[in-house]
Length: 476
Image (spheres, rainbow, N blue to C red):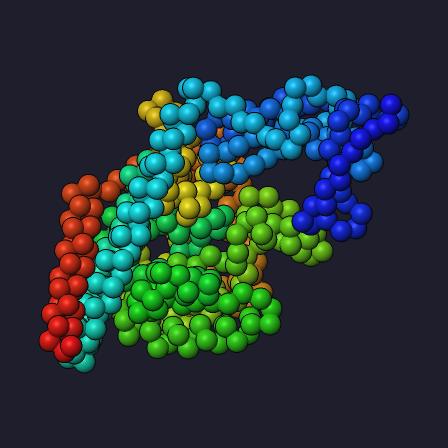
């Protein structure tokens, strides 16, 4: 019996590609393998897959291919099996039918509603907090001429409150921070550089949270971040505060290092900054890992999986620009226990390692929308951040020459690799030398403090709105 077909050209069609609808299900062609269908892949976000019935897609030459699809709560589609199959009965061509269990539907609906509510609050929060910050900065400009130190102190406090609002978005989603290793509160009044591994945009949010209870560190901190952040809603705030936006790429590298040196000379001490946050890897782990491993292979360097080899340029510029030197040319150091330290210049390098359970980083979208489940009591480690402040180095022990500094910095990231490997195997960081076990500290945010800064933001937004409305009516 002749086969009746109806040909449809796809929108991406061309090159002889067509979809065929057949009134008779074709038999598999001779010699075509039938691939076994693996077990369903569990959802990355909710643990139980949303099931899909197979969908028939006919290609030329005619042979049906069945895709088993999985829907993640954030709207991501995956194929967990690709099977060459024979007739599929009682299926409508070009139709994918979703089967969601009654138990999953309410939870999925709640996640979507909660994400929308959180997103709406985040938008409202930005619409009142950022313009209010800018208005206060403009009104306080005369104070900058009269008392620059007090002006930048007030600006720094408002900057800290803004970062506290960002931290609160993750806090109320159930994402918390555990700190390991040294207690950096003891050096919060000294000048320091944080060397941080970089896995995702959530790393920045994590630091915003864990540094909130470290005195004036956040208010007096300078961030080095990718230039793309300059064009975000928070970019104008960072620009006013004096953060540095660095452009990646070999063609821009030398120019960017010169601009960084000039920026530090003009803004770091003039604005009473004390801490710098630096991601020496120069990009996210998933983007740089392959390049880093290739470079390591060519230069006989260790093969790293959980971190990448750092770039030395920005670190060298920061150390040379900010380390105060004694008369003999050696860098001045410091002691963490000396609260009344009178030495000037950069004194400490904090080797900071961020690890996520199961090596699954949290990005800023998750931080804002909160669609990952918060930790429950008996499995709360599954959804917590783990932050290790594993090393604090006096600057006097850090070499400043390029080759020696490269070796020193590579060694720090090799140690990070060992720390992360241990964490992913055991769920905890190894104890310091001379100790039998590692001790962690839970970092908490005060709900009352969050309520106060959020209230201040919305009340300020209301106040500035009325002020502008008054002047508008007076002028027009």
